[in-house]
Length: 309
Image (cartoon, rainbow, N blue to C red):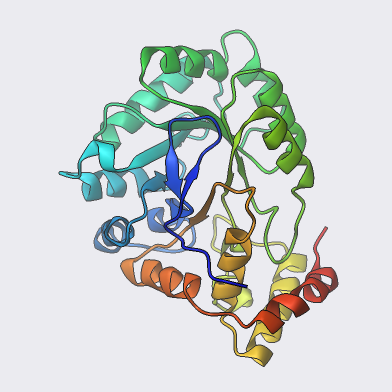
């Protein structure tokens, strides 16, 4: 199987965005997966742009990610990259999916990032009752639709794992992009319904967690996790099996995990959550690692053996 160019431009649904097939997510450089300093976080963004990635995704929830992206983007022509952020999870307004909070959050993100518009803004990680509030009159969606009409944001998305919530957001008629979370990795491929939904509605699709929240990054799965987040034990055990399988074949697990997502044509973009410039380079090298055809032939058996429901 031939290597896919990670800088291949893919149309993100019906939006104005033609994004590189692999782009940079902000969770890692913001410190979600472990401590990261300003210099390292800024350098990660700079390295991603230097390599040619043209899309950056972030959130106020991701610690210092927005501020560090803003520092890295000073002096960078605004038309040379796309950027997205999120509402509903700002640390100063956690769980507030009202229109007022959404407007406040977007304004704050623009200020911290140092930009005058967002290419895409997601409703971020709502629970079912929170999404109901977001979609109701006076909710976040109402504000995002108005902000889109004003040109303050260009597209609207949702980033959440629950597929029912994706469907509800899509049924509002206002959604442009779905960001899938931890549902299309070497550990789990629970995506067919969202693939079909996106195709039917012309939606963009982003894989927001191809590395299973760090379990497939190459680190010992037992070491993954922080005080803020601990991976499920079943996923840790499945990841250990994947690591062992890759070791037996001399294949970096990072290479297999990233290329597995990149080989899925229904994703317009796969995000990498690199925290430092060296991690960005590591992902780049993994994306260009030549995986023997025999490994791809054997892979379905592994996926069946380790699948986490």
